[in-house]
Image (cartoon, rainbow, N blue to C red; front, side, top):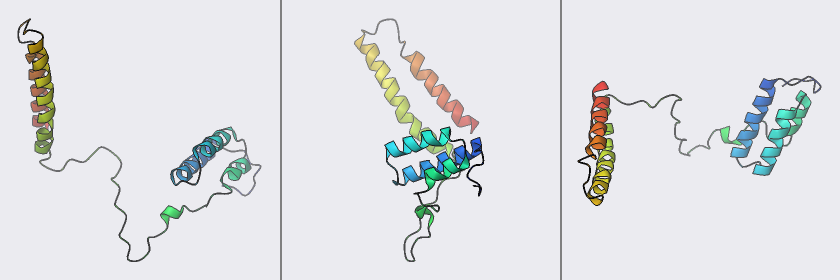
Length: 142
């Protein structure tokens, strides 16, 4: 941050400190109680020095970011942020995955219709058929 601990802290300074505390909590360096207490103090802090005091006993560089020892297998790559990317022709597997859902819903509604004495006409079709149309419409849009 800055060299003068009496400088007033900005909202960005507080947010950056809260994010660092969250990373240290996720790494297991803080208990839930310690994390909550420090987080409350971070958002109530008025100076940069108060924020620095909250991180004073924690490492500056996250030990999880150190390079892996030689011979170790590399860490798996994380997916880029944003919506999931569907490969070309990806709608067919998605449609195959949707059919069991449709079948389970349709059979469940059909069984309820049978148990109710099949009264009121085949109302279960009002649920099963629109689901099929939605699934097919989605497939044709891709």
